[in-house]
Length: 301
Image 1: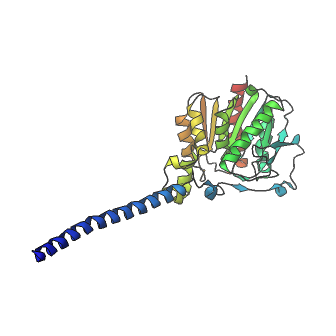
Image 2 (image 1 turned 90 degrees about the horizontal axis):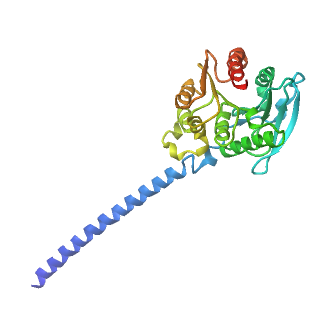
């Protein structure tokens, strides 16, 4: 009896140990999986934006202003206080025979001084220009982030209507490249007479995945909201919209403009500039401004 009892006890102990080991392995695997999911989320652009914030921005400080020829333009230095307290710098360029004013948000490289050919053409059309540098660009203080540049766009718009006393129906919002995202943020919440998007993208996640293989693993909802505002804005009710894009743009492919145009509600116009790359505005200025002139004249009458 004693021997049988011992065998039975040994069998019972083995049966008890086996489920316990299985439970421990299951818990360990679950814990490791939870850590991987947590790390994945924590490294996503939405959560870890400080890791990615420097990637889209290539600012040049104000030293590049030296030797600029601006005597043909009536340029006035203007300053704004950003939402986070940084001092922003911009140019208010008055057109002699003014018809409206352009709120101009530039791309991710250089500063306002690198867009002089655009300002000159706009002034020829009777459009004054209020252009500005994002935080960290030109003479502006602070650091550029996706959130900061959108906030900067709002501050400049409010200066335009509150300090310079332009009514919203005389304001044309112009976003170039990354500035298209700023225009999207702005026009989602502020009225305007018209919107011009030049060489911009549909959403930041979409273009980021095209250019950066390290972010392709992240779904769109793990990207910050600011990068999606452009397409969200054009889908809803908006001012008359002009989309301009070069067919040979290797930085933001023309397909991005096509996505925007297909998604946009009316009124909308899409002009492709044959042969133009991303940074070749000066070489194709005539084509760009024939399109802009026709668009503006149809909207300012």
